[in-house]
Length: 547
Image 1 (tube, helix red, strand yellow):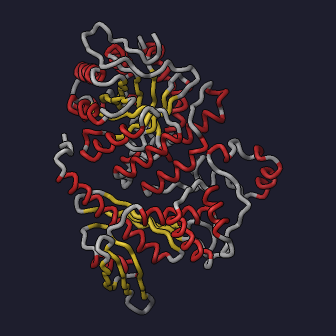
Image 2 (spheres, rainbow, N blue to C red):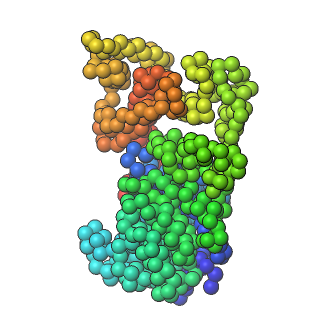
Image 3 (cartoon, rainbow, N blue to C red):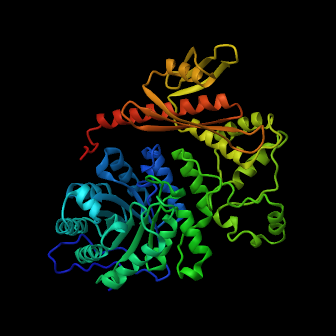
């Protein structure tokens, strides 16, 4: 029987179609990207539908095999995101929707995936004693029954069904094998073995995957997937141990974002398999030259910064400061680099951008960095570039990326636009701020002033007097985009709305007070736009109800 074929004939279930999963080559590892589902569960990383669509389009360019687009039963917004992604992606890759082992969840997932060329329902249930006893409050027999019923229902609705055995890393292996064998017999095409709490170590997790191939009948007919969390810093190592033991699908996120300490980082798995292909005997079909662009897009949209020393996509991943290292790399790159940075979408440049650089030089560098800007957006970036270049000796690539990101935030949608600000501060003295905003829809100009304990506090109080929306500032961080005393500063803030949701705002400027104002107005715009979308959805009778 080919890998991925159904093994539940004769059990009285009417399957909607045969599986569309092709017979897998022994050396092919499928990349299942869950940035839009598990990655979005990072605090403050929630995305609207348009942002999810933008990331989904980039994931297609990246070449992922499966996009887990969301959890349709969780909210009307998630349902709509899955529906639109499913309709747009076409047959470029599988579009997957998550569900619990609950009939209404599964039916909601199938409805959201109705327009998908290659739909997959991802359903499952907890298998550890902790989950059975404390969360589900059921015994093993009931869990087994629910898992089998969920797979049968899902297979009656779509051709591809993936089953997750939640918290498998802490489960009794014998019960895990029993559950996996039962769901394979019920029609599961893919079985996902998650280390949900990041509990295991590579040797343990590899042995768990190996045990499936030794003890589970029918395991050779399905794809074994691994989904690892990073609570002990082992997510990538465990996922690779699973591949070494025979797993052929890795579930991961861009930049490793996700619940708590995050998920397996896609870029780490892909490049580890590429760099050590002979060791693993397997590889992916990811277009690795799109990795950096994808990483930056996800970071910009979610507001979650990538740490400089992050492997593969961090700012310092291919940087050399030691004289010995520089000498070695200049003589032969491979003396200190096991990955060619070109392979992940990076490239060197001999162009030094200053205030005397012309339009052609700036556009050329933007194209080298992967930005294809329309003329209007280029003019905005060029204007900001000239202002920054007048203040700095050299404008670096990171400065340009920050300018483009700032321009994109401005053009993405604004309720209020920050026109000007004036701040007075000192000791002794009372910090005061005056702010001028434009209400975009009407063109009305709003001006007000306030004082505070410091310049940023005064500034935010003045903005709050103009934009009367209840929120709490829960995080404020500042970092320099580049090196040097004249560096461009970037402010990232998070605010919590009255209903408890968290919105991220970012702003960049050579004046950190201006950057702070831009970040705050950006976060308030995101909050206001989200509320407007909800009101529109409530007014639309076609919007699905919450389950």
